[in-house]
Length: 373
Image 1 (cartoon, rainbow, N blue to C red):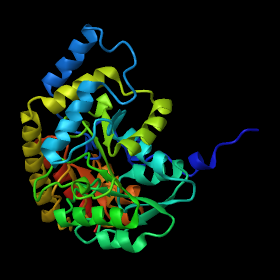
Image 2 (tube, helix red, strand yellow):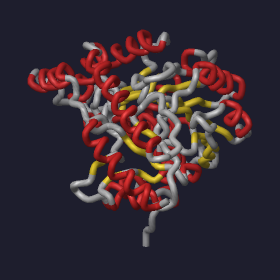
Image 3 (cartoon, one colour):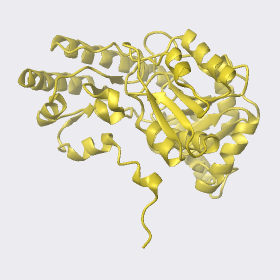
């Protein structure tokens, strides 16, 4: 009898999804990791126009339509001061596929992948699916990843390390000097740095910088997506940029698992990247206001929470039983251990929700906090 592969048996359904399943329908959802804003109208219109013009009826290039690839290259020149080669970009089915391609193309069986713990749930699972060995790394007190920690844990079996700024689930933003160090480590040790920059534009304090800016070799690849910046999670449109030889290998995987990203989504993404950026600015300003409301409430109830400098998550330290008590009060929160063993004792709260809902959630969480203390 055919059983299941060891790779798939080594992973499980995301702890985030388990929380969603357990929540009541009328709960205030502070667990979901997606903006609650509409996709910009000009991006929607571009998809509709492309569909009506018959541009989306067939496969596109494995790499993506030329207009989108050009817009991505121009975006990196504009925002990151990086020149991406003509064939150094591939459009993917969201940032998740982009991560999958980067790992599948570079990790052999038994090779190590270093990543932050707590960190995005896909890093561990996709490493295992690629046959690699996950090596979760502890964070500093401010919830950023220390380059020294990465350097100390590199071995002859290390294939890659992942950096994520702004971070999920922490909201932490790494300083420019750390990004320079991550690039140096990738160059000096000849290992791949995968930089997850999906939350790049959602920064309130400090600034986003990419290790790709500082790399002297082609040992840095960047994963990004329209999902968070343009509130396009459902469109499933992301990308990877890197050297042409690295992207060529990632396309070899992409062509068999996906062929190409959704054609309508590609036209929408091109318009989002190349068009007016005011919707992004407005969204970030709203997130900052919501962050401050949530932080004030958490601190007022006596919880220790590092101030998140980006993304739309807070990651407070919480008492035992807090997440369950909060759920009983009708607020969805994700336990920190869903993001790694070192996340135990924390909870992730998303402020991708309206201010009034956040205020009501704070009142409910205060009752829960008083009950578990």
